[in-house]
Image (cartoon, rainbow, N blue to C red; front, side, top):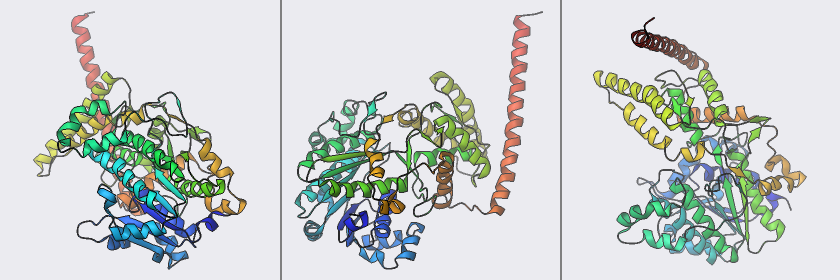
Length: 501
């Protein structure tokens, strides 16, 4: 049975449908499985805007243009219902719950917090409580075929140097205890006090709560088939529905934008460590193939785990943090930032002493001078605060990802491409041999500029920005030569004073 045939007549529930991956999942199902019956999307009201109006606004994004062109009436199959991921029973009304219980065949639980700096209480509510609420609802569904949970490749970060297999590892923490903890009347005093013990080797609340949520989800696999998807860092689309779609910042886009502006100049990323990522469209295809595979195997219970990741190298080039900096600086030359403040530079050092020295001279000193100029010209000083926030991230959450080599088993994920029927290859192929790593990084940067920053990338505007970029380069080189000359003069003066010839 073809994938589109399997989805024919199915009624699907998607949480997190307003997010980066959720939107892409909705449009891919509608485009590639046109005979799907209904897609229910859980949407939170926001600033007085109803779930229906919020969803209507989202469908105006370029991501949906191809769908609307090919199938003008497809979006009529989407039903937006009100919900709130941290509320009891996911904030879904009794009436809507009953409709879902009677009708839903497949659940895609994509809603989550992906912020590395999320407070632990919020992370538990967003990533564990929401999963529990959705699993409890799924348990009551009368015709559920599959429950798909979105996790992360980094849910087992403590296994540095080991091969992280595509299976659920025992959790160091009991999800029931964590849920009781955040429901305690004094949780805001209690949780921070014991947080160091709770973190269990995890550097971020994101990876910890995702690890626990996997264990929680596995427990429910006795009631229905469960699929756990573990995407690594998700970047812009490679080609589906078009190249370069990105409307939500990821670690690469945030870092590249800060470098393009000249704000970030020093990093403690290990230039020899591999960069793990996957494009959005490949990851979404894997979601749908994995769901179809549950039917193909005749699963009635149990759990399948897939790590969706492109691996350590593409087109023979090992993608490392060092390569990222080098290719990133090339992209800076090609697409200078509208908000460029100085010449882009990215020095990568692992030695903590050298890092602090370079950070002081290349980040702190320019930030203080920049704020002084801003204050003198009547503008709001901001550079020092930005620098302080970056230093906190540099020595905290980012360190866990940029200074470590993670080894992920991809056997299950790669098998998804092998089991595809020939007639499904055009629409769902996971073959990545045609992609070039550097081009994918460029697409991620272009998507950031176009759809997040809304920069004008016309030849005329780029020409002006490149001219400005060259001025920054000349100023940077002039100052570098001046500093070097002063340093040599100072060293010479000290030497001549203490070692007279």
